Image 1: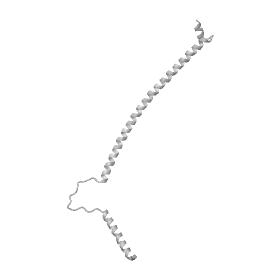
Image 2: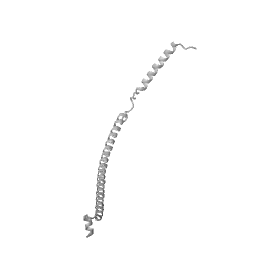
Image 3: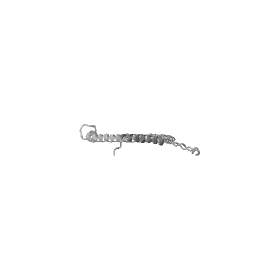
Image 4: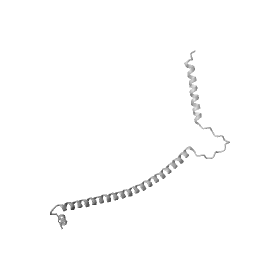
Length: 126
């Protein structure tokens, strides 16, 4: 049972044309019935997306303002804290320097008292 090429081509061509017609018909909208009352104006997808975009922009602006303010506050706090720590560190270094200098003077006086001919030795002898 051999089907000839002449019979297959017209059948395939008919199927191809029918599928194109069905595809085109599926893509077009059906006409609205003339007796139907117009529906309430529901927002379209484009309008919904525009509104969502506006909301997103507003939220981003608000969030960025909050972030900027928080960054400024934190930077000020960090600056003040750094200044306080620097002052405390400077005071600690100064105190340590004074204590070291006083210790050196005390050691110098103690050594000078033992060396003859120095003012410290003469003061001890009096």
